[in-house]
Amino acid sequence: MNIHEYQAKALLRDYGCPVSDGRIVLTANDAKTAAGELDGPLWVVKAQIHAGGRGKGSFKEHEAGEKGGVRLAKSVEEAADEANRMLGHTLVTHQTGPAGKQVNRIYIEDGSDITSEFYLALLVDRVTSRISIVCSTEGGMDIEEVAASTPEKILSFSIDPAVGYQGFHGRRVAFALGLEGKAVRQCSNLLGNLYRMFTDKDMEMLEINPLILTTEGEIKCLDCKAGFDSNALYRHPDIVGLRDETEEDPKELAASQHDLNYIALDGEIGCMVNGAGLAMATMDIIKLYGGEPANFLDVGGGATKEKVTEAFKIITSDDNVKGILVNIFGGIMRCDVIAEGVIAAVKEVGLQVPLVVRLEGTNVDLGKKIINESGLDVIAADNLSDGAEKIVKAVKG
Image (cartoon, rainbow, N blue to C red):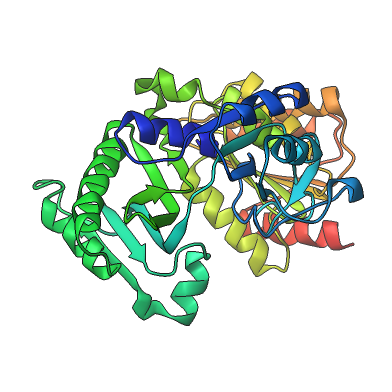
C-alpha cells in the first residue's frame, strides 16, 4: 500500500526526521488560508498523486498550464492561485501512463535554500532478505537513470538484522555523499530514525529524493515516497487509515475487497487461475504462443462460487480484454466450484469475448459436465498448452 507525500512527511516528523513545514489543501477555498499559515518567502506547491516524476509532468487540460505538478510561488496569493490551477485537473507523468491521474490534493510547504541534492532509500532486498540502503550524490533524478549511466555514483549495502542499524552505517552514507561537519552526525541520526520507522511500520520502500543540504549546513527530507507491506497492515490500523482508494486501480481495489490477488497488465487475454505459480506459468505460455496477458489473477485455493464470480466480473470489466483463459488445477480448489462460478458470472455479466476453460484435478469430470451442459459458448482445452494455443488463436482470429 502506498501513501501520499504529505502523509509520509507526517510520519517522518513523528520519527524526528527533518522536513519542511507544510499544509494539505483539499479544496480551492482552503488554498489561501493554508499558504498564509506558512512563513515564506518561498512557497512550494505540490500535486499529491501516487506517482513519481511530478515536477517533469504536464497537465492534460490547457488551462492548467504545462509547468508540472511541483511549482514555486513567491507570495501567498500566487501559491493559492497555483494550487487552484492544479486541483481537479489530470497530471500525466512517466509513471502514470498517458491516462494520468486527477489531482485531488495539494501540499503547500515552505521553500528551502538548497546547496546539494542527494538520493536516499531503504528497500527490502529479496535476495538477502535484509533491509538495503541505497544512496547517491545524484539527487532529484530517477535512480534508474543514474544506475544505467553512472552506476559508480550509487552506494548500496544491506543491514544484518541480528545487529540492526549502527552509527557506522550512517557515517558510511554521509561520507559517500560527501557530507562534512555536523551534517555527518545529522545524516547518521536521520538514517537511524528512518531504519526504525521502516521496521516499526513494516514498510517495503522508503525513498527520500531529494535529501538536501541547505545553505545553513542542515540536511532535510525534501520529498518522500513510502510503501507498506499489505500483508502486515492488520498490525497498523493507523497506516490503513491513510489509504487513498481513489489512487488505486478500481479493478485491483475490487479484487482486494474479495480477497483476490489481482494485478492489471497491458495485454488482451484475461487469466483466471488458482495458485500464484500456475498463474505465472499461464502468463508465460500465453506469451509463448504470441499473446499478451491482461492480468495476473489468483483466486486462491479456497475460492467459493461467489469469489469466482467476482473474479470473472473483474476480468470482463477491463475493456482491453479480448479473450479469457480459465486454467484451474484442482487440489484444494474443486473444479465443479470453478465451473459453477464461471456460469453464474457469465449469466450475470454476459460473455462478449472468447472463453477457453481448462480444468484438471479434484471433481474435474463434474466440472466439465457442468460447463458442457450450461449452454455456454465455451472452448474446452485438454491441457495448459492446448488452452493457451486456443485462446491466442481465438483472440487473433
